[in-house]
Amino acid sequence: MEELVALFGQMRWQDALDILLVSFIIYKVILMVRGTRAMHMLLGLGVVFIMLVISRWLSLLTINWLINSFLSSLILVVIILFQAEIRRGLARIGRKALFAPGADPGSTLEEVVRAAEIMAQRFTGALIALERRIGLGEYVDKGVRLDAAVSRELLVSLFQTSGPLHDGAVIISGDRIEAAKVVLPLSNATIPGPQVGTRHRAALGLAEETDAVCVVVSEERGEISLAVGNRLIRRLDPPSLRNLLLELFEVGRSRHRRFLVRG
Image (tube, rainbow, N blue to C red; front, top):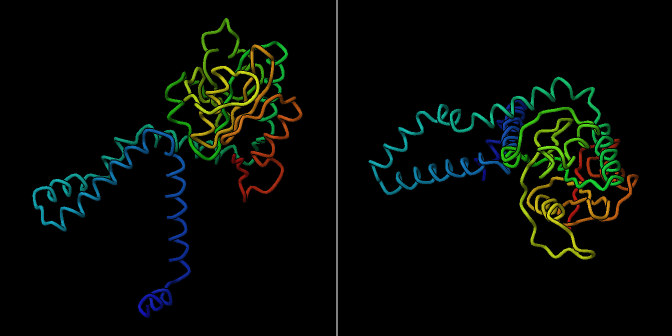
């Protein structure tokens, strides 16, 4: 205990800042890869490290030598394994660094609300997933990549039944439409009220597995719904949808605390 107190007594403010920065970077990396194939690769590397500890403890010289040889090229291995995630992460960091000061998340949400209103009036089915903290890269990879600016006109056109991308979900990250025609997991939960279709179950399935917010428009009833957490909020009018989205994404108020709807 005394050694621990002495260690903290010798710590400089630079050391504390260094630890905080490293912790923040690790936290951001975990958030970036969570929900992607990279997370499984990280778990695999964790297993390799556990095997290294066990091999040293049991004096398994051959296995220890093999693992050490593998780890000696760890940086190169990480770059090869995670090249897609590294490229996507750097692009996202650069985009935020360049455009975040002038970006208005409220304008993106407004485009989503307006698009949902138009499609509800036309009885056009739609499913729009809005990324929050947990990355949706795993699902983006299953769709058709777009990387386009968010606009109501583009969203409406994507869900026109005459178009090739209308079947599936559109994923929005920040102020960009990342992909269309995305296949999402279906929820098995019992949903009260009138029977719902595949879009609503897909929206709730994604919301259950991640912290994404999903906006659904029913082509049968022209009804707007919102899925978040394990909840499906139905029969929303445009003002109600707008207020919910602004609250969920904390537009116009402090971002130090994230609002999460939990069932």
